[in-house]
Figure 1 (cartoon, rainbow, N blue to C red):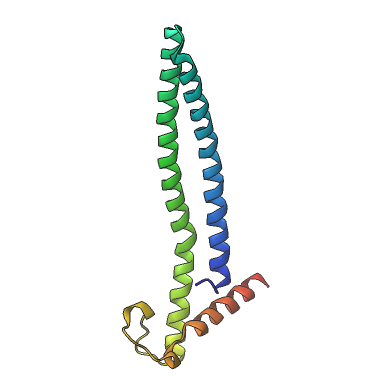
Figure 2 (figure 1 turned 30 degrees about the vertical axis):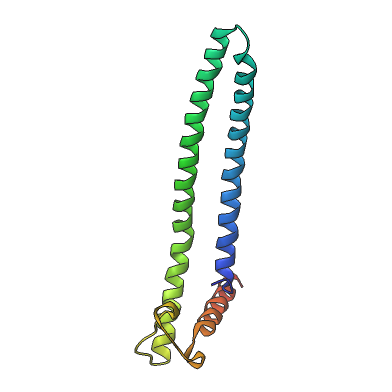
Length: 139
């Protein structure tokens, strides 16, 4: 798959999306750490009301952080499906076309075989078909 140009594009988009989400979460994490440090400093003082307020703020921010982390995970999974589903469909189409053109009765995924002679491996041919069709679309 890594030789398929569109797969590389999808992979890059997913990395960019994940990095943006991680950046947002790191910012919240830093805010949480700052609040925790403030709470630790205040623990030795006699400002009980302020300490309670900061502890409540911390608890609320922690809930928010956990919710955003869960949302980010879900958003990433949705984005992954959104971007890879069309790719999977194109791969299937290329395999079906190749099978019909070459009069194949079966095309099996490599991982389902205990042994296969490399002469019968059509992976690179399918990748070439996919990459050539991607070039034709962009030109």
